[in-house]
Image 1 (cartoon, one colour):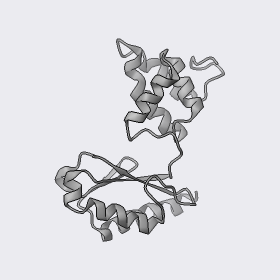
Image 2 (cartoon, rainbow, N blue to C red):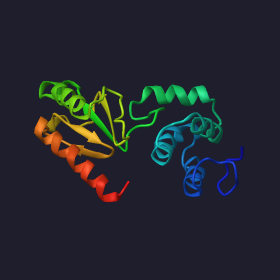
Image 3 (cartoon, rainbow, N blue to C red):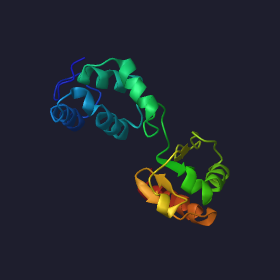
Image 4 (cartoon, rainbow, N blue to C red):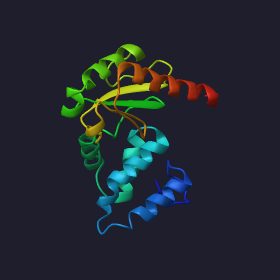
Length: 172
């Protein structure tokens, strides 16, 4: 499989393939581009599938096992499809003390899915995460790249309703 941008064989869009080609030149060691490449790939493809892992490994010149080891370390990287809106509820100490566990349990009931689950319509996925860096505004959650702080069950209901309404507006 050729992975040079503009040539057939890449599973990524031409724009992302070109971005990868440039990204590996920005670091003294190609492997240093691994996490950014995985994040960009996940954003484009939706998750880190076997073909994504294989191509990223080839582009950097490392083994697929090396890539999988990095993926297993970071909770933000996933090897299974997530919902369109990935709800990450923090349950680390600051959030836990201010109701993070209750927010997580409320989301499980509201969405009807367990931790790491995806709603049947594929709209939402839910996961408990260790920390999202919003300790001063606990309890907090992140939906895709949007932060929501000082949560209560009522506030998280409003957040979820907002994403559901936004989805209806897209016709998807």
